[in-house]
Image 1 (tube, rainbow, N blue to C red):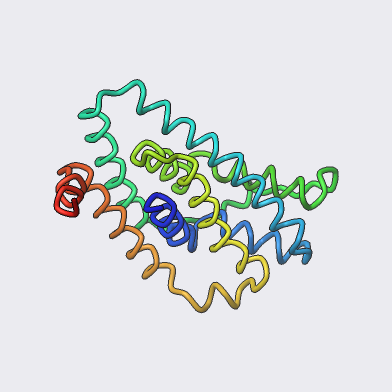
Image 2 (spheres, one colour):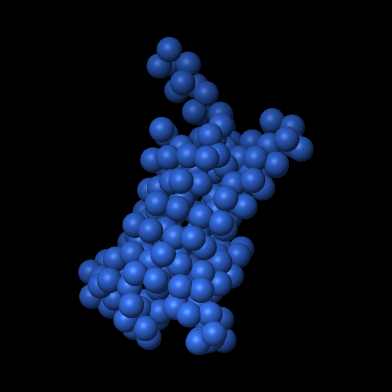
Length: 195
């Protein structure tokens, strides 16, 4: 359950102000049809994060536990730093095509926008970190939906209520703590105290 809660919270925070959230705003403003956009975001996220989860599991099988610990700890700390860099949606990253329909367009653009994005890399790292990659993928998908569904329905009003800088700082702090706990095996220490 810890994997589900952590991955949901971290990705929901990481997604605030992210380029995929900006894409959700853009699609909602352009088409004003929230249901196919939300369904497209959901499908694209499930597929993208499931692939990322598989990569995370694969990594655990090819690396030694000590090497994995150092790579994951460093990755979480790198994610903390990356969270402090604001995202922008480049105009050329989004092209609207009527052939795909709103659902298809949303699926394709969201899937491509997530490639190499913070939340995809976080999914790989958390799937490698936790023993329950399915819960991680469910959690990261829920986190994406928590951040993006309101963006689709509420658009700019939602964006104005939350300071992306504050949200990114909180998210960066969570990633930094996860990195330090991983590097120094502090989670094992706390687990032994709880038993």
